Length: 359
Image (cartoon, rainbow, N blue to C red; front, side, top):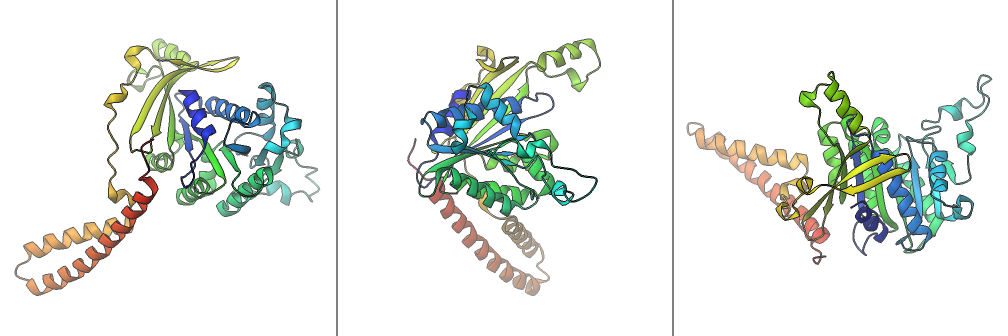
């Protein structure tokens, strides 16, 4: 199943479609998202070096780890970084994310920047993580520097959406990710998320933007949420080495494919194995996705429709104030026409984006 994820990112986007997007999420109960992220990154970059991927370059946006972490990761996988500089670039948002070190560079109490800044010509320091537009432009410039212009594509790996959400609202981050997916030269994009750091609605937004969602869960749930007895300590130790790996693939024909595996964390790396038959998910039980047209409407339009319903109910009950009710109904009809036009427009956009041949 992990190979299916790597294959989807390797194959990239079809002409006129959004780039495949993967969310890798975990929680404190099963904190293995970084290991999965590193596995996907190394597998994708190996495919790029071998010429088996649609993308011809990789841009890594590092928020939670230094550039040297990823360079060492690829070296340990047998990659010659010196000969691969023209196929990978790291946008370093870790060393000086807000530009404080740069501002203190002239101070007597500050001698020099960390060696992480100068770790390699592969890494470019970015000091304005609060500005999503500047971050977007920097990523695109780095990607074009790798592959040039035209229709040659590159992939993007973001190691922490959590850090982005610390400095920007969820609407800005969602727009940033959506713009990357729709760029003509982006082949695929994937990011890491610690879901228990955010409200459920934030996680839902990021999952909605994704074509693949990979979730890590503990192999054994703690009894009654307690962590004090010896049995639960044994379960915690067990969960620190393995977990369940659930993946949802959103297909072009409107169906969702769900797969599950077991993940094992070892000194040599991460391994994926099939779940026992009793833990496997029957894919035939997964229903076809029924698209709710109201999901494509803005919150303001949904408010107008709810308001319209309330006005109609009031008109029905207020027979003694018929004149005022008629005026209110007239206003409601105008609002209803506006909502119907917007809903029709959103449905046409949905049809154009998703009405593709069955894959």
